[in-house]
Image 1 (tube, rainbow, N blue to C red):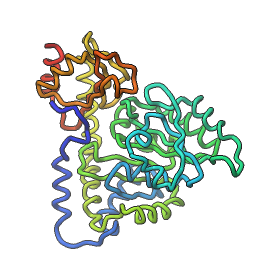
Image 2: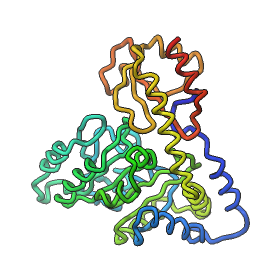
Image 3: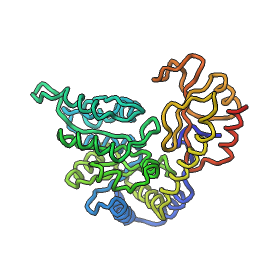
Image 4: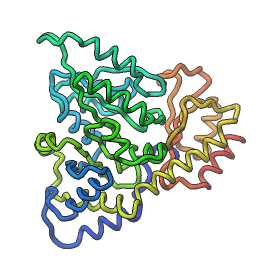
Length: 350
């Protein structure tokens, strides 16, 4: 009964088979292999962006941080939600790779940036003298860190504000496929058609071993990203192993099927537990994550019976949780089974 993280799920067999096939013989390295050409063409087609620049790295932190460094100068600021991944879980990597750009934290319910709060934060730096921080970029996370989803209209509202104030826009798409399935939209609609300049197109959480794509819809930014990727130590010599994963991921829409499975299993679980009086849902579970509070005694019982999930004590949680309750996060992945869900439900109702 593992609901700890979609990061902890195994790689899909098709991804492993693609790696085995790619390991045969010799090929050019550093992204010059034919497989990378195929990946670039496929992603351009998927995103309806024939001139997009496509790059691969091994981690989401590298994808986000290198992309934001390309968009943002050291004396500029990155506007992001207070509970965004780049603020809470990347050990200062965006600040490091930008050589010191400031993160300006913006509030909003359910980890979604409030447009008014964004505008207020931008106006806080309205004086653009040499003494002041300058506008740099806006980073939006979809799916958010709390498992919620920005609608396309909500994203467009934020990017319109950004563009009006000369901010470039980044989408942290670590769970991009889960958001796209939940919104029933296309990759293009979720990115450049919603005003996004660059997306971190995640794959690791959705069945890959370790690969993320960075897609620039403005090719003028591409060369700087290439230099930053190399200088930052994220240009792999045996790049074919990244290309192979991404090829396997995109082949026959595997990536869509895996995300649909994760979302579907999450909704099955949610439909069963939402009426349980012992479980208080904190945020709307709109993709593959459920946040809730449960009695600490129930939490102890779940753990002792083999359930695994992320949990926070009342002292650790950013939410005001009573001392006799525990905040938990249940994550479903492409390999979550109905048997696991049923076993967990039995414990919840025990």
